[in-house]
Length: 141
Image (cartoon, rainbow, N blue to C red; front, top):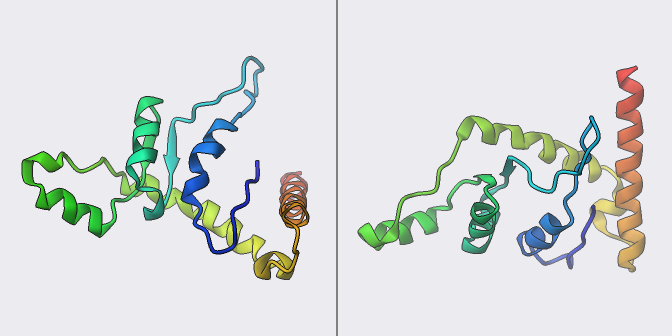
C-alpha cells in the first residue's frame, strides 16, 4: 500500500490510515493478519494518538521518545507518567526500511518528484517496488 502526502507534509499523519489498510496474508492460508506484533518508527511517530492506537490494538511500539517529550514528561513529575518502553536492539532493524527508501530515491524522478500528478508519482513508486521485488526473487533462485 502506498499513500502520498504533499511534498512538504510529514509522514506521521498518514500512519493511522495506513494501519487501517494493513493486511498480510498468512503463508499457510487462513485469514489475513491485520495486526502486526510490533511497529518500528522514528521519533516523528512518537505522538500520543499513534501510541494510544497501538496500545489499544495490543501492538508493540518500538519508537524512541524525542527529547522535548522527555522534558515535558519529567517537568510534570509523577503526573508525567512512565517513559514508554523502547527496545534499542529491535530498533536497529528499522534500517531495512531506511535502506529501501534510500534505494527508491536513486530514481531521479521519484527523488525530485517531477511528476505533477499524484497518480503518476504513485505509479512510479509502485513500479519501483515491483521491480525491486522481482529482483529479490531472482536473487533467491
